[in-house]
Image (cartoon, rainbow, N blue to C red; front, side, top):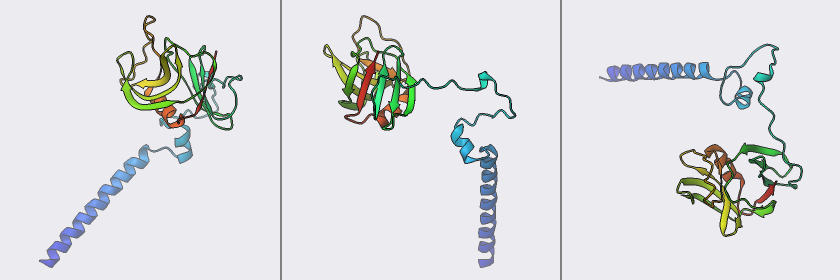
Length: 188
């Protein structure tokens, strides 16, 4: 009996090693050539090779941080550009993204994150997440948020809302960046 059980254990071990080897091969076949390459292109899209540099192949340069937005770590919200920048302490934009403005906007100036909520129902009745509030205008609270369903509809002009909508991915980045007290600079 001991000879049979050791044979079974040996066979099972060999089968497991073969399975791990096959899975490892499959993973390596679909992985990029280097980790550096993976960080540059996290979508693993096929790379164009050669010296061909068409303008169509290049992503547009990110919009620069507005010059009149102050210094240091801050969130910059441009009313005219309908865009937000998350700026680090050195003045470098860590992320920029478009937003859908609310019907009520704060006047240009400097504010601070006053409160945050992981998830609530917006004044328009839509479930929202990663809510970062920073101002109040005529009794309407203004802040950034992302709709759980991913929508970013323009609010109806008759409704007074303060929710500046962003994508869920951008909302998560905002949530991670915008701790209580973080400066928010609103520019024209």
